[in-house]
Amino acid sequence: MSLLHLYLQDFRLFVAARFDPDPVGTTVITGPNGTGKTTLLEAVAYLGTQRSFRGAPREAMIRAGGERAVIRAELVRDGLPLLVEAELAAVGKSRAQVNRQAVRTRRDLADAVPVTIFSPEDLGIVQGGPARRRDLLDDALRMLDPKAGAVLDEVERVLRQRAALLRQAGGHLRPDVASTLEVWDDRLADAGGALAEARQNLTEDLEPRVVESYRILAGAGPAVSSVADATSVGVTYRRGWDGPLAVALSAARADDLRRAVSTVGPHRDDLDLELGGRDARVQASQGEQRCLALALRLAVHRLATERLGAAPILLLDDVFSELDPDRSRALVHELPPGQTLLTTAVPLPDGVSVATVFDVRSITGGQQNPRPL
Amino acid sequence: MYTPPLRALIDELGRLPGIGPKSAQRIAFHLLKVPIEDALRLSDAIVSVKERTTLCARCFNVAEGGELCDVCADDRREATTLCVVEDPRDIVAVERTQQFRGRYHALQGALNPLEGIGPEQLRIKELLVRIEEEGITEVILCTNPNLEGEATAMYLARLLNPFGVTVTRIASGLPVGGDLEYADELTLGRALEGRRLVEP
Image (cartoon, rainbow over all chains, first blue to last red; front, side):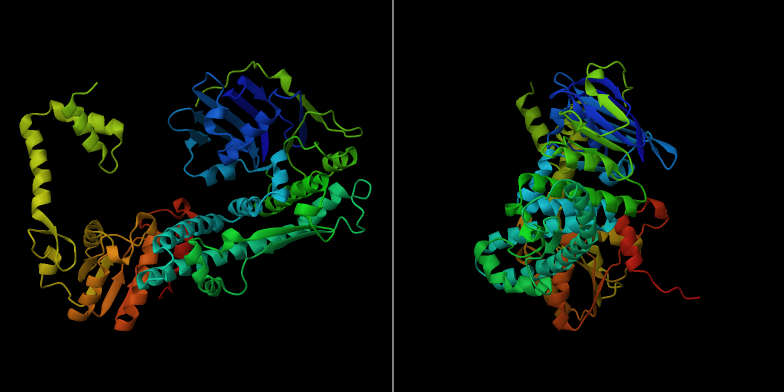
């Protein structure tokens, strides 16, 4: 998987622009703030995910005054050319095509342009609430396991139905409520148990890769903290229940009815992160947390590379912020094989050698006109 | 912009399923152009379907004038096999197969707490009465293969268990005449799960 050319039209600040990254190695995108570095990554990521990794609504990605934005990418996959195009409309439907064929599902795009994204907001994976960590796992599951997407959708829908039923019950277990609740609990026990199982297996696959990635990043510099074994990383999936989910659900029923929420299930689970035996969420430094977040993303990336047989395009946004020069060097030198696009607002640390450095100011303003869809 | 009657027509049409504001406007302007007889025929058809179509007292299929539906009135149908569907339009779909010779029971929906549909809103009590009164021996659960349909099927299976009737669920799988490569992963996965031994 390799991105050869990226064409943008009316995408954020780009009127019309063309970007040719290094097709096999690392391209470092430089330039002052607000010149469009992250926007280039956002455009590539949009092709694979159909959303902005900055959480921006679609309209925000269309240049002010423009009616629609176009992203067009020429890639090579298994030696064959691949043309992926997306059109973002301010009003009406947004479209996407792969090799001039309309795309039916999001999954088709994810298969065409697999991406791994790391951005400064990913600090929230370590610092933030459990939902961020569940999302990390769930996004990886969707990418790696075609069945997982359906299970995730089912769990979400069952939870919504169950919540509606609990609200209607008003705290009382009438016979009709009890009999239907049993049915939804059965569905939740099946799908939720399968989801927890899948997340657990994924976590076990990820852990050695997180350890490896973290060792590369954090082991590079002086001792990371005063604790002797500071670089020992622990990644554990933690279910909020023991034994079969069906049993836990029936045990929690009275509580669920009283509070009118589902108190047990995969939507309450968490991914425990430890550094040197301490809870990384509250006891690690911000630099350590950022390293760990990056290590988690890189672990998913490495696993995806093995499972999919080709490396997704690795997008690292503003990755040197809060990394000291030693760790920045370690990161660049130990990047997994495959195409990587990396943005930085600060100069490259000393001793970092990268084949391709691209100043985004050379295309802001633009010279080429991509053809519309 | 519109005259009040035209506005009212567009609003009414826009409330129909599958018709958005643009389509509603197009249909309304089309009706403005057609001869008055055509418009009257349409309005008569709507009024008469409302006046004369009722639900079958036995199975809740569509029927005419308070009578039993065609299927229930037909003595040649097997009286001991019951196919449970969500809606009368599902009966039309099953009938088109010409594979089923029993009778039906239309629940009038599926369990869906989000839309306020529980067992009380469905024709489930009537189904249980029929099992005993009509000497039913097999019930085919033919609800939709989505979450709500599956939940309804599971709910009914539990309710029917004490009656000692055979309860079956329709299979899910691939469309006939289709290509495997075009099947979505989920359907193909279900089809693999439900594979059968091939008799040589």
